[in-house]
Amino acid sequence: MATLSLPTRHYRMYPQEKHLGHAERSLEIDTAATALLAVDVGGMGLESMADKENDVIVRHIAPAIAAARTIGLPIIYTNNSAPRIAIHRSELGRIARRSFELEWEEWGQEANVDPREYALGEPDALKFPTRLEPEDGDYFVRKHSYSGFFETRLDGLLRNLGIKTLVCVGFSLDVCLHSTMVDAMSLNYEIVLVRDATLAQEMPEDLDELRFTKRLIVLAEYSLGVSTTSAAFIAACTSAAGTP
Image (cartoon, rainbow, N blue to C red; front, side):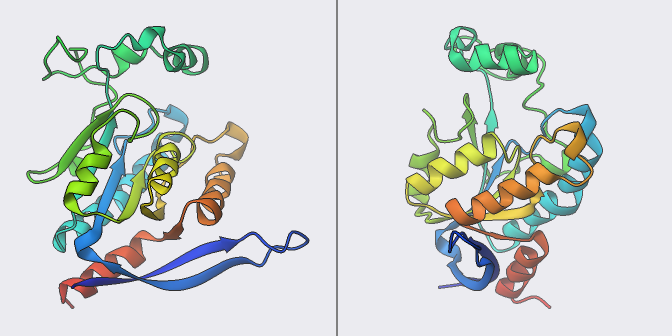
């Protein structure tokens, strides 16, 4: 059994008077039971965060995915889509219009789908930077809600692959990635968040310091699993592959 020796951290939210805070431990992960889960890695589509988002994609997400491939970890993309299920009449559709001025069916349409089942048109939500395009052998699961598990085939895929641990990257940490990790933990998957391979949707006054992102990372570290960095994950993959 090949293992990843991965340095991780979690947050100890006790005692209530003064938290003990972060603690670090080395996690031994069975590579045969581990997958990299890439949630909406095409981005959030916010002009105000485009530069920071591109930096995360280029410096952290793409290298982490490439490292996972070198040791044969399954790469599983889960991405927004627009099945023809009258999303415009759903609560999600109403929230998307109200909060983001977004029509989900138009935003989630795809160019190469059966128009009887999915919205056909020029992709928006399903655009991938070239360096993040799924490759042959990767898995792709369409989602039509925040969580990659809601009414999708993701859980079935993971169980068929024998996956117990999910290394998670992508966007956004406050909505889709967060919701997917919550459901994964509830389904008894072990969560490892690559904390520099994600961003939350920041308010303008918090953008420079990424305050919301940092707070949500701590939330994940005390309520969902552990976190690591892309550099630590890449180093662990390199060591597991037996390369210098």
